[in-house]
Image (cartoon, rainbow, N blue to C red; front, side):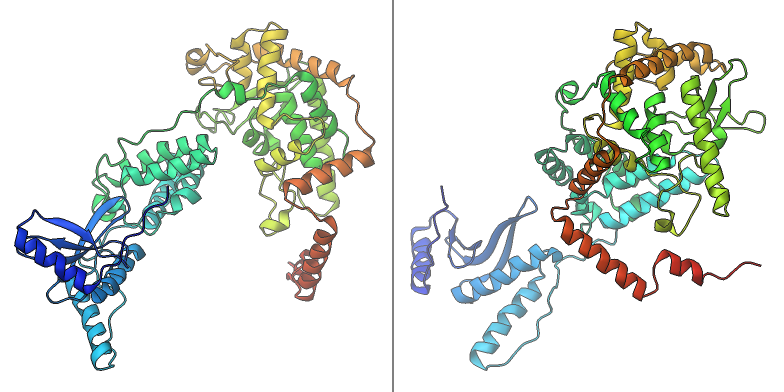
Amino acid sequence: MPRKAVAVLTGKQIDDLIRDARATRAAARDVSIGGCEGATLRLTPTAAVYSMRFRHEGEPLRIRLGDADEWTPVQARSVGAAVRLHVEEGAGVPDPAWIALKRAALLAKATKGEAVVVPAHMPKNRAPETWTYRQAREAWVVHLKAEAESPAQVYRPDTVRNYRSVIGCPAMRALDDRFVSRIQAPDVAEAVAGLVREGKRSQARDVVRVSKRFWAWMAEPGQVRLSGAARKAMEELKAPKLGDTKSRQHFPFVSEVAIMLSIAQTGILVDSVGFAVELLVFTAQRRLSICKARVEEFLPWPERDGWGIWWEGHRKVGRGSPTARDPFAGSHAIPLPPVAWHRCQAYIERTTEDALAAGRLRSPWMFPQVRARRVGDRTDWHLHEDTLSHDVAAMPGCRATPHDVRRAFASYLQEEAGISSNLVGLVMDHAKSDLLHVTDANGMTRRYTRDEMLALKAKPMTAWVEALRLARIDVELPDSTELKAQLVAEHQRQRGIKDVAAETARRRSVSAQAYAEGRTSRQRKRAQPTVA
């Protein structure tokens, strides 16, 4: 139901209200004078005062304007509107001297036609000399990076990146210009509620989790005077429930994963992306672990003819670091069956030959950045994990995501192949299971042994590769031209391209402009000085 409009009181009506309040000796009350939202007249038996009443950032405010004997209703409405704007612009409650100056400017203009200069803002209280939210999150990121780069390596680089993205997400950046000392749990809860409304419950939970750690750090003695953060300010902040996560997860059959493997082996994808998908399917490891794989981590398994070992260096769960005596300390050893090992060797050989033919050394990364020019022609950068997600999502007949491969791996081996969950957990490298189909009881055992238990891991790897081989027999793909057209069309849909012709014209225009300005990769390469 729409709110009823407030009547605009005239000067005579206001005089009558003041006279009645003094005559009847009635209790104090507020009357809206209309014409300016929040402008009220406070009536008591002994006084009548104009004020502004409204809520700002959840807090009720009452700001005194002046006595009704001295102020006219027009002045109260005009100055009241300026007072409200002063607060809503983030300048805080205005100083009484500023309010008086605003009224004086109205009087001077009405009586003498003169202009009185009034500053845009004059807060009643000085702004805090502590951090704003933007300054606070920048300071925390500097601290996290320093801790990650210290000899103790308190944080992993991926953890720093995650924390930075969470506290700097668009929902939280709305607090950037607010002082930390004035941010309370309801302010962050409002951002969390917005994420929930957008269906981003997982991100909302991350905001709650990381915000509590962020405020706890700001409230430490080392920086509390700089931050102004209140201790336990976020203690009552509650994370939203995820609900039934299992119903939203996709548990693909081996046949769907076999489609992914078949498309990756057609040669349509860029070589590094294609084999990255193959390795993902063969080993069921996480995206970032695949993308951060190094060539030196892939070695033959001397005890088994035709087998290889991937000494996976990047792990979600840290377990030690390499040493001079043991360069693979802390690595996750994954045995590669002959089919996977043969494909791995062939990929390394051809990419090495391609690099030498181009007159450069092969990148140490197993999967170098596809478009090195995007990062300054660097050869020491790896494939971005989102590339895997986008290319897998574009595959026709395949609904599974890269992480769904892990669910298929665990589901098939335990439910169909009858392999113990302990052995499956060994391959998937779980400290605590993050998949509902895996329970790894070997966590404590592995903390006290240096044995990588390769023989035990070989059993689920053999069963998985054999299942993929059988499932591939029934996979039917369109011809390469049609398949490539489908992949391109899906990539365009992902990027929001609706008019292909217009996008082609735009690309040509951008390329022509880059060529005219000498910014193409070939022009930049020719301009570089030759090293003698």
